[in-house]
Image (cartoon, rainbow, N blue to C red; front, top):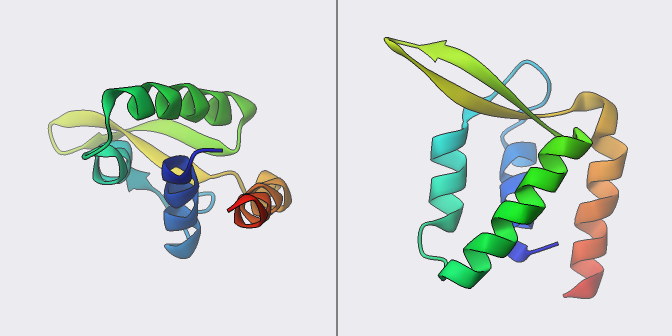
Length: 93
């Protein structure tokens, strides 16, 4: 797992964005990937899509003002798996 994706997961976990509580995808992803080189960004995008497809991150479209944006939260049913992934990242570093 890339360190950028790990930081996104830790950010969501630290802000208790689990289940019903969520943050906008634009804010979370852009803040963590703004200064990344293009090669790292493509790797991050692939890993991010895989995690969303596995269901670890829930991505839902919410109505905000006059527009709709995607919001992110962590799947409460996959928290054990998520914590194992983060711990494995700690051991690898």
